[in-house]
Image (cartoon, rainbow, N blue to C red; front, side, top):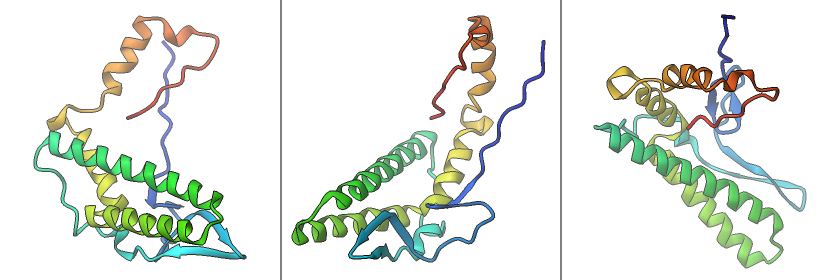
Length: 155
């Protein structure tokens, strides 16, 4: 049986930067331009884990991770909506909501908390890494012999 190597993802150190690059002191929105200026919101707390604690139980951690996913999705959708708007009052309302979402993510502990909570969820005490079960199951179903690559979502 051929030996397979798992692809390692580059860790993200803050929203918008990857390992090896300097972490920003503020979080730029998904490129939003208004009259040539990029809008930047202050989220210095986003990378601090001290305010966000890992869940006391696996269900609490899972609930908080799911909520963080919801916030990331809303943040992205607001950024897309912001780029489409032309009404100044609507832009202002969307900007306020974007700041609220970023503030809530920061209060949860930011991306650093999220990554640590995700790793904790993969620990043996909390059920472990499901890929150890999944890969043999895919082989058992002969899905590794398909002509096209199999696409999976890691949740």
